[in-house]
Length: 310
Ligand SMILES: [Cu+2]
Image (spheres, rainbow, N blue to C red):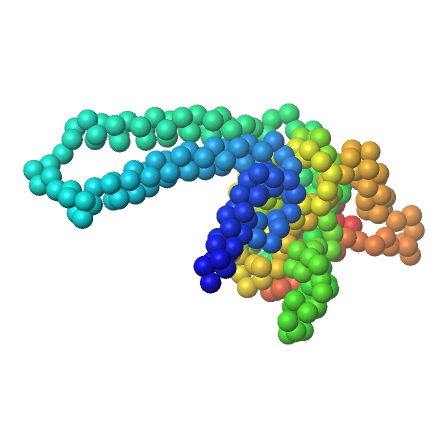
């Protein structure tokens, strides 16, 4: 019984320590991953470092405080003849110490955090811009100046599973509710600026591996940027409760080397080019689907304004 309990604790502590030691190399979260991931951008690395710094500061404080408490409890106990000091009221020296030390620590932590935050919001010198628009319940991506744009919504297989009523764990979908029909393709090692807005209610665009999330608010254009270090598939979700299908508007970013991105972009442009004859209509990108008549009308209006709509 006792050995079993120790084993459990051992496994728990190892589970907590391992992600710290391995600095959570993988971008995708793992089952039972307790620490945050390092991600694949400068911003996510900064956030991770700030988080680890604060974590270790807290660990040291925790060990000192609980250590002192445990020591006092065992050393000065009644059965050992300890006598309480009934006249003690306060100690100015101690009060100064426990005020000054936390203030110094907070200032120490604020300096790197602030400089990192300032870098995080510096969208200047971006090499390209992608406009992200949130809809109930999908995302629309426009590559500004490229005449390329499309909507990105939950993959049909996930949608079928969720509406079928079967237990999703038996459906054997490795990325259930995390796949989309059209992924956001981005080049690596490129500073990409995002302008983020919404067409109906507030959403939030969040891909943990990029290290930030940004609100998508109707009538307001928020900015963010990224520069992805390594190619890969990075998944995210809407992070602002936006209605009944909030949980069903995932995000998939596919980061590829610049040459591959250029190829993909050229193919997308060819797809959007006007057809040579009236008979041959090219396959138009998926239109925002009607969820309510109102949403449909506004989405259609947005489509009309955007030059990308075929
Ligand atoms: Cu949403």
